[in-house]
Length: 465
View (spheres, rainbow, N blue to C red):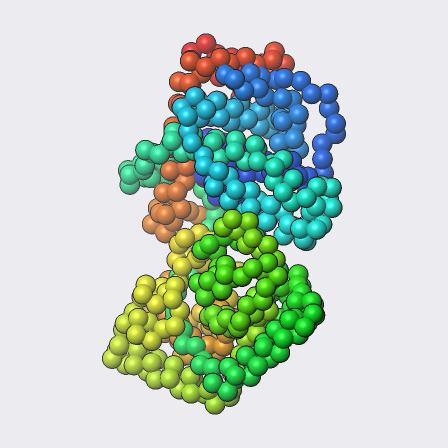
């Protein structure tokens, strides 16, 4: 099954009660920005609804409707009605957040603004292009979006308050699963679970010196007047080289510690001394600082690995492999003692799918070199060392253990319990929100225009309950 079909199947299972709140909140900025999407035709605006002290405009409905359609959803009046319903819920959440004095700090707003603007920059290519698109400076763009971001964060905080006590028990999960018709159960692609021991090839002192000498020569060229960005394009081995080494605005905790410590000490335009991290060696230049956010460019050079060092590392990996298959050492113990992979070392070598937070991977989610080896293995088998890359992109040898392999199948409680548990929680949170809306409507001024009465999904807003 293709990825898109799989995702649609999961949505059907999770969203028994369709909830577009999160989708709308996440897309709101991009719909305002208009990046990579067609803008709806200009319409004569009018107030469609009043919820407490908040109004819903016809243009808001049309903007969100067009945005969702642009993402591939088939347009219909029923979809427009559902969008309207969720926007009304948003207004109710926002109105209640203000009444309850829900707090969102300036720091939260700034961080979210930086994240969203950073995303737009990555989509359009550079800050300069974004400023050209809007005909405004980055600061002016952020000022324009600031009220919108504040409202989004208030809505999210209020919804979090509504659903914070929702939890699910095993019986809830079983009941939810049994309520799904057999022909509506999603189809799950083949998945694997595996563990690994990663042995990095060491870098010789001679090679470290060669790399440092090169970086120092680039540093001196910058100090003598050459453009840092030009040298980054020519020499840096990082993906940011195509942007002149520029990383965009990041905050504390977003960078590896050694890099971050050096970067935050710099003054605007200043170039750092050589910095060593797990990725290699860097020189860094500060472009701009805004409070606890910095934008830097850097040049990364990765040391090369000599044939003798590669051979020695293979021999070490092979000896570890022999200890495991002779039962002299368990895979978990060997991972803890010898693995250089920080993410799996103290987890018995178990590899976690960072996108999903589970240990299960589909074929396209695994490094091809690793998957090719796992594909040839039986469950419970340990591989001989294979040459691959570490998480930092450096040469390493990996010893693999195949924990499980599932066949393509319809979702079931035995194999897919965690997925079904998440779906159950989503449904219970939706029900909690529906119950909260019903309660709050009784004590909140609600007035909708008559042309919304034709929407079946909006009947509950007109009902006298």
